[in-house]
Image (cartoon, rainbow over all chains, first blue to last red; front, side, top):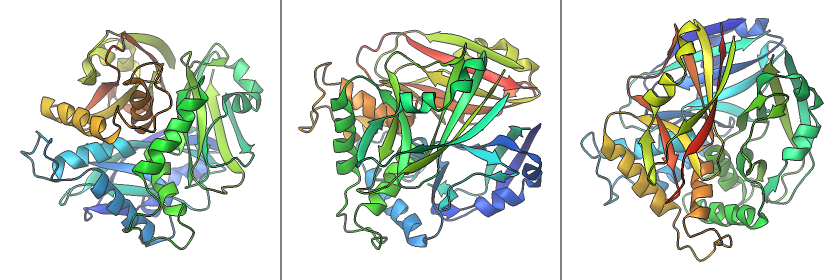
Length: 139
Length: 139
Length: 139
């Protein structure tokens, strides 16, 4: 069985946002898969997806703090500054975290750890809505 | 053909550990796949998986050196400090390296480069045993 | 349907190189897949793959600038220096960006965002030709 669907995530402020529930609700057919995988792919180069702690909002704020220091906006070596000071750091952060997640499915549900949740990582100040391609397959 | 199995990795000290052999031995059915993929997913948010050099232990020590400096424990901006000073850096390191690996299978074996091995990246001082979900599929 | 093929990428200088077209041209059978995934896996530990902005060469130069500063060659803590000063940073960069990409296929084409392209990330001064295993599957 193959399922492929585009999912639209509403615009969010710059930062790290928990979107597990929103994604699962957009894919009710996952319940039919005894075993399989879900591939989530973001169609952008200045936002990314990762999996991390799903309980404490301060973890997500600390992600923003670390990434903003590790990939600074005002670095003198940036050449690509035409699209704003948040653009080039957003590209680097997007590749550090990656554009996609592949998640196991077991007995009709995502087989995640207790504390694992999907983060939408919005690296731009005004990134707008973000689109994902979700591809599920299995039996 | 689909195979899904949980693999338990015994507790290891903080650092980077080569676990290729242990994982392959837990999945003897891979020998039946002419072509396919193996997806390995760690069920935790303070440990991760990566693929890197499988021969020199000093490479794995250098990974620890770099990550400990890049994501410091004593940074003044961490808010999430309740679970210990190694916890928040562990979350960031886990997302930088990622929770899963997808590896090609050819002729019944992992089709890795000569020098590629699977690392369990243990980012906590006392992370305990770690659980993976292994999902193999192909024909 | 499963397709698996090794793709050889000619030697390139250290840096970030757009290789989307080269990869797609090596996989004409993708046109037969209504829905599926393409998994690209690099068989090396000092080069990597990522997906990022496909239009501006300065973005790719800025990637090199950031990674060269974030993972410096002359750090006093490197133990693994036998293979040259560019070797150990190459290993760390390779794991930060990752050895593989999984990309959605829809209607016989890669379903990427408008600005997304595949980067070969060459982290060594003289890395030589690089080999990928491409595995496509779907229906």
